[in-house]
Image (cartoon, rainbow, N blue to C red):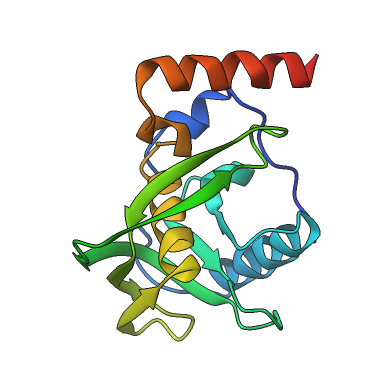
Length: 164
């Protein structure tokens, strides 16, 4: 089921999500809805807080063919490369604007997978960017928080003009 993305500045987008104790059928159902929502955007990732589910859940699919989503509960970055990569980032919570953000090109992330097992996985390129973007959402941060105050203010003014 496609879920509605919260509109900025909904306070839940600034609230850290709660950890997931175990992967249950309810969690799997949320992940399925998140994948449907991500594909409908279309996007390469989604954090549960973006749809108002305040649990540390994320889905990422940066594959060209699609259908290869990685489902994550409690994702955390263990290691990040010193080499940075620039990418235009956006969010369905703040439609119509994007910004060029620098993030580590590669990360190692630990998470509970769809079987409930702890998994460590390396992500590179767009996969790494998307995973970090989703982890930010789960911590109550938005992509524009990586910008200077001046650039952030300009982006938010532009977004309010797009919305009106």
